[in-house]
Image (cartoon, rainbow, N blue to C red):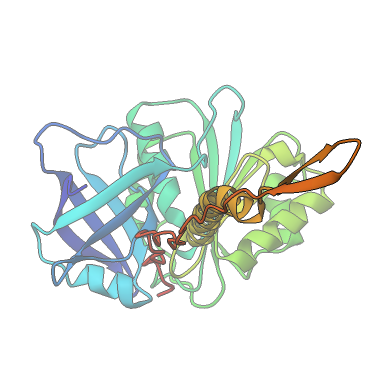
Length: 337
């Protein structure tokens, strides 16, 4: 799976970085929809590293793959120390956090922190293809000093007349140009202001930490927004959780553990069945015995009994223990950073 190599790493803010990968096979590149994500890994001291999931930042039109990461745990810190040219495992794409141009005519993108990453792929693609789709991006951050892709977002807004961006800043605000800022954290009043209290015409995309996602979903539920109009993606420090069409989240490490457990249980049941099949004939042979036969000859003058004995036959049957399976369970290497 070493189908990509690391091109370079660029720091976007004090705790977020941009990984740029390029194909090893020249012109061959990965096909994906804007908003999807990948699983990536590398080799450390000759052994495969754990695998983590990150949203694709680059447009499908780009030859290289770009991934936005929040540098938080041991895995992401290790990524930032890799040298250009390092072989990378790239698996995917995954996820359905994507725009349906037939259904999603008016979109509000709710982003918090590094949750901006899948939107960058969407906005780049929409702008490059000149797609006439009305999009409002609401980007929540702690301060204007720590906003990944800030300068690029300003440039995209200039190029795309259908794109509007509002920054929701909870602490320090430094105004830049004519950018629109709102002081505070997400709440019903701010959502009413963004939507003009007209929720039904929008499709809402939500990506960010768990608390941010839950707050926005609760507000939309109170406004009776149809569930089909709420598309969510949840980020955690160590892995990305992708949402399924029913709105349930799928934890990739837990799915891996679950499938491994089922495989182990199936293997154990199979071995026990084989063992039982081997034992049944032997138990039947042990419990079966041949009865002795008696013949009585009678005459008018005397009665003579002749006992005919059948010699016993001894079968030396030795029990051979079934061979233990050589398949041993190896837990997945994925761990929380």
